[in-house]
Amino acid sequence: GRVAARLPVELPPAGSRRELLATPEFVRLRDALLAHLEG
Image 1 (cartoon, helix red, strand yellow):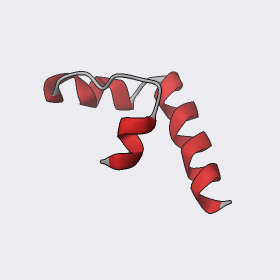
Image 2: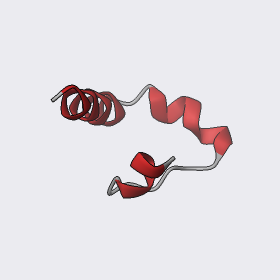
Image 3: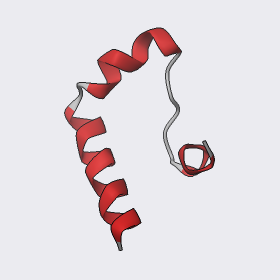
Image 4: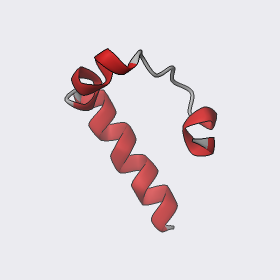
């Protein structure tokens, strides 16, 4: 979506997303994004 397009990361093909979701880097990114959205 629009938010993802602004993130300084490139999403891998759909087949790799499940692995991406399990990485500590993604967890930190997700937490930071959620904190930003919550203000």
